[in-house]
Every structure is written in structure tokens, then in C-alpha cells.
Amino acid sequence: MFRIDGRIALVTGGSRGIGRACCEALAEQGATVIVNYVKGEAAAREVASAIAARGGKADVSGFDVADSKAVDAAIDDIVKRHGKIDVLVANAGIAIDGLLLRLKDEDLEKLWATNVRGAIACARAASRSMMRSRWGRIVFMSSVVGEMGNVGQTAYAASKGALLGVAKSIAREYASRSITANVVSPGYIDTDMTASMSTEHKEQLVKIVPLGRTGTAREVAAACAFLASEEAGYVTGQIVRVNGGMYV
Image (cartoon, rainbow, N blue to C red; front, top):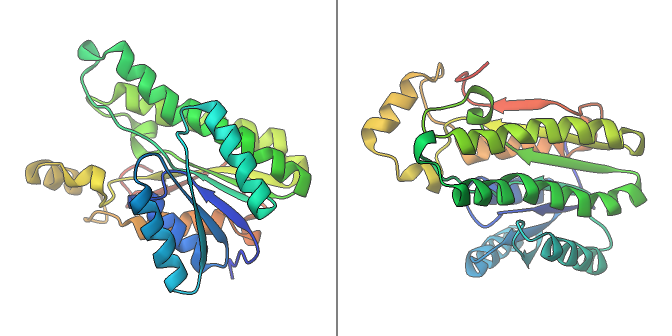
């Protein structure tokens, strides 16, 4: 169940954290995975090598999702090399925190360029191949913060919340071509991004999670693997929350 053999899956920001876990989960289910990176080529190749060592198939593709021309060129190249793109996990994202009164225009623009424009650019480019195949799965990686908000994260929450509207609109636009679009919304997950938090901050966060623990990147990736599968063909425009009950 939930096999995706023969599918070509692109995971943006796939060299670490949740992105890496998504690459590994999709490869385990039979997909050929394209590991996207911006600067961490060595890390991306290590992910691809690890997948290959376990009998999976993987390739790498370096481009910045915030550069729409680079996105178009890279995805065209992926389609030329692999014949198509069936699955897109738009995972690449950045976080710049700070109180609203201290929010700089340039930080807001950076967040929007990567988290929103970048995700849209990847979906637009990848959907061309999906439309020809009349089959596709698009998964946007949002955040619990995009749904519930958080002090000091106004700009980040706005960028992640925007993906909900993006996915719902794409779901309606492409439904006739058997292309689905959904959102995975992780809560407090053990990743490189959360590793820098103070012990006190981590303990406070865990207290508001009903399951009483942090989540794992693997648990988030499992949701992505399901949404990429044939069995999820009747699921579109939805939000899958992997947050331990932190927001319901």
C-alpha cells in the first residue's frame, strides 16, 4: 500500500531535516527522488548516496526556488533527464523571526520570495509535466504557525499560511487532470531549525503539545508519502496536520 513505483518525485530543500526524510520515504515507496539543494551540494549527494545504498533511486538538482528562471530551467532539465515529474514536495523554506515592530522589509521579502513565490514557481513549472501525464501530486510544506500564529513570527506565519490558499486554489484548478494539491502542516519537530532553541523554550513548547513530545521528521515524511500515493487520489485541497495535537 502507498507504493509509488515508477514515479519521479522532486523534493525541494531535500538535503536535510524534513526534506531529507521526505526524500527517503518517497524512495522507500519506489519513487525516483530528485534531491534539491541551494548551497549544500555535498549534503544532497550524501542523501542520494544513502538512498542508493538501500536500493533506491535518487538524483540531485541544485537551484534556488526564489529564482523563478532557475526553477524553470532546472525542472525542464529534470524532465529531459527523467522524462517527467509526477510528485512535487515543495519543502524549501526559511525562517526569520522577530517582533513586528522590528520587522525589516528585506526580511519580509526574503521570506515571501522563498516560502511563497518559490513554492508557487515550483508548482507552476512541475505542473506542466503533470498536465501532460494527466496525473500529479503536489504537497506544500506549511507549519502549525501558519495556522495558529505565534509571537515574533508574523512574517513567517504569513508566508506559511499563504500556502493553504495556494494549495486549495491549485486543487480546484487542476482537479480535472487528476492532479491533487495538499498541505502538510508540521508542529514542533526535531530538526536542525529547532535544535538552536534553548532548553527552556523547548520545554515550554512540549507542555502545549497534548502528546507530550516533539515529532520526528520521519512522521512528517510519512504524511507526504501518503499524499503522493495512488491511494490519496481522492484527497485534494486538504491540510494534514502532524503536530501532536498542538493545533486542532
